[in-house]
Length: 125
Image 1 (cartoon, rainbow, N blue to C red):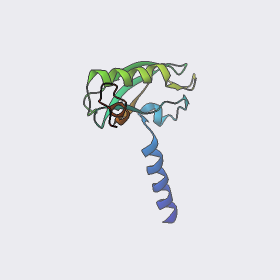
Image 2 (image 1 turned 135 degrees about the horizontal axis):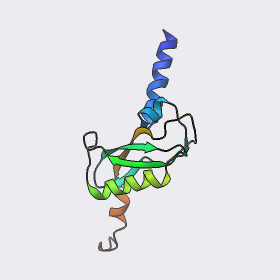
Image 3 (image 1 turned 120 degrees about the vertical axis):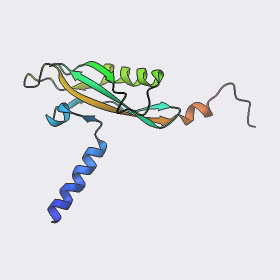
Image 4 (image 1 turned 60 degrees about the vertical axis):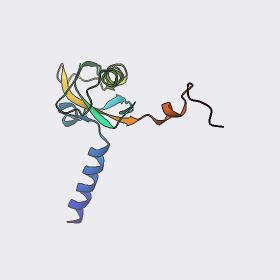
């Protein structure tokens, strides 16, 4: 019973921190160059992208899944998509499919720094 409880807790903790799902996650393809899975935006939400990874580990396709996403605004979507395509890298492997499928979740967080550093705001002194 203790072993099962420990396993359940570890599984929940591991899955809560992971933002890559699908066949890539199931096949345990390692991430060689990770990204921050958050972007600043005016409200909290999530963007879910369907991705395809080639044999070299590069993300070759990244399409917003509107059904799973809570935010579909173009600026947030483009910023998250560019982050995934340009910076997220997986391990090389001939044992993986030519176009390994999965999906990535990017969370949005309110950008409070932008409000504080507004150059058009009157002085507070």
